[in-house]
Length: 163
Image (cartoon, rainbow, N blue to C red; front, side, top):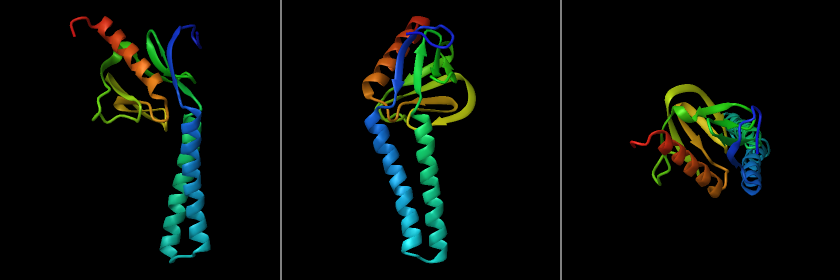
């Protein structure tokens, strides 16, 4: 399989349909229920404003998750990128990877630390980047992220044989 700049795609991670549906339905239902409670039950005005603000945040999050999980993460020989072409990290720039049980990582995913930082990006349910830390996973199947992390670990070991 090849992609945009004719690099061979070694591994792909994308959100599973079931998890995507469940996550989007849950957040959307939460937003709609909060709006219903704020209007139909008519609590005190300050609580009504609070409920509507939380409902808008939940609906906004559901839309961000819908857009984010529509894409995929691709691993090529030189880079980790979003399917839309956004560069997540260059393989040569990856300093370490954490797949441990207690790592601050997305569900079914892994954490990457790069040598150089980059701007913040958040694709809910798929990946995020804050400075030098990148989290891959969330609504993704464990077998896909495990394969990608194993391939990245092998590429890093090949690149740095002394480690």
